[in-house]
Length: 298
Image 1 (cartoon, rainbow, N blue to C red):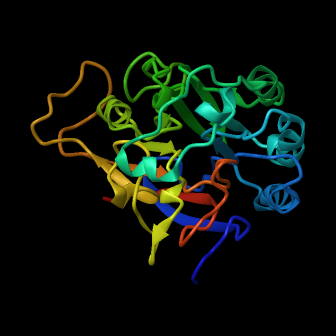
Image 2: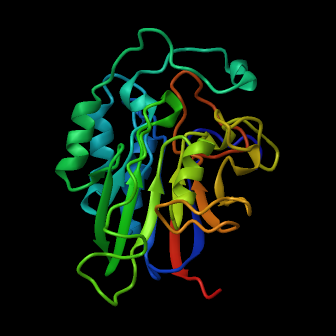
């Protein structure tokens, strides 16, 4: 369809083969960029709760206006009843400023001087108050749907706030106090899919990595072909399910189960909104994704 716009909300579905966690239904949301009064976005966000996911993963950039916190929290309230984790994006911390969209063609955007700070503390506190785990340079362990999940998250790499903290648990592939049980599924979470961060997750034993930030290219060529990713991720991976490959020559790290040549699934969300300064989407509709895990038989 030509000219899909900012309100053509789409739910993507992917079947994801992983070594454990069969049956998990993970809802990945990102880049809401909420502005007060966006009622169609509000209603669609609320409708996502009808999916009854086992887990919600929010990869940041919830805000796009200084007065958006209350309304975006109301929009997400039905989803906050489910187990969830989140990481921030730069537009959770700072309000967007107008920039020439053509600048994205010359490389990733940069934080401007003296940006306006948003009420991110209240947003994060509200998320945490419902039980969602803040993975901003933190790890966490959750039992979801009868499955053990180990998370490692970073603050937004796009503005240099990322500090990888390793993985929870005593030893790679084990979970203290659960001998003989299914080993925990390791999920890495970041806002911007910067290659160094993705490689760190993969090399230290991630089973799955989730990110956002790219908006899928936002303004794309026919067929959804991205022109930019606003980071160093290849344009072919601007959205959807792909993988991170460990080079065959890679040395196994001291921590983790990163085996040379192993491919780690990567899901990059094309996001639900746009920056307030560039409210357009072309051949790249706003989206959320339901990832349904099944056992990898290979």
